[in-house]
Image 1 (cartoon, rainbow, N blue to C red):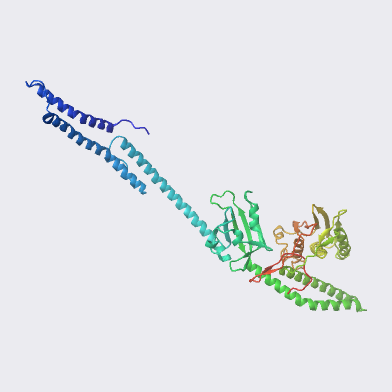
Image 2: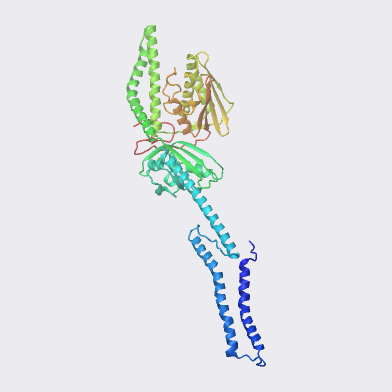
Length: 512
């Protein structure tokens, strides 16, 4: 801002001229008085004339200089004191002066600066209060959640940890803050880190969402939690959050399921011995009894069929118990899959004809050998075909088994023209004890066959899925790699008595 000459400059010039002109005027007056006398030529005596003249000029000059200095210093002091107040944080300090000139303009400008600073700070304080209120809301929401929540920075370190996460893991917020998630929150599946490895692959890939079921998490006291986990990658977050992780405690449910498995395992063992005896006696009757009436023969055949069905149920219960306890024995061997399917066809076709179902196979001309457990393969296909039989109508039921190669995997599909499966049931179809429309279903079963199928397929390093819609049948498909990839992990038991084992084929040994 440019300064223009004003009243203050005019005051300064006036004082300067007054101070310089007073001695000259005094000397001129004395000279004039002496020139009117008859004293002759003017001779000025220093002591009597010159010195008093000089003193008369200096004294007013000194007085006027002091006044001039005071005139300059007064607004400067006022501005200086106001600046000191501003430096102390007092933005209500006044810089305005009653003086004219540049000082007034400077004071006005500084007043404007102080006002704007005051407004800026007031606005910043208001925004800070809003931000703090939002943070308090977020903190209240997070701490009221029953699911554990924590956030990670780009380095995989924990920067947020809610109350539920602290309670579930037994770790304090101060304990985990700044720690690597894979160190204090290691989510594992069959002993391998899951979530943190996935997050490492997502850096720079934009927003991504990962979901995992039945992961194991060790608490601070060494016990285990079993949780469902969801992780969301947050790109370019201004608060430094790279990922937000939520986990839901399923330990109580896992304990309940373990109690179920322990119970059915015990019950199956207790049933197996008398059932074996019953089957033995029925077989003896079937071969030795002669001259039975048609009605008695029909009763005997029904008893043998029922005993066989009960034996299958007991075996399924034992298989599930072995899977859950990790008592698994995976024995891969070279399998000629086409020959295997043809042998299975010869075995099952007569039985399906008795059940009034049509069974057909679609096979390629050739396939490479498959490294797999033949007993496990048979279990998968028999379970899927029996499941298709149970959900098709006698006389019109048709079941199609299709085999083809898919890159380095062999794909097998079992399709039927039955009642189909509702979409909302398909997600839980491969879990234990689950049956579609259990109360309304006319089919019998425990809901274990598909769970066992999934376990065996995963033991081979493959995967299984279903495609279906109500009223239009269902197609179950599984793929197995040509090379054996599965490994056996022993079961690990924790202090909560909840166990999980890696999938592999089931040992022919009792469950303890």
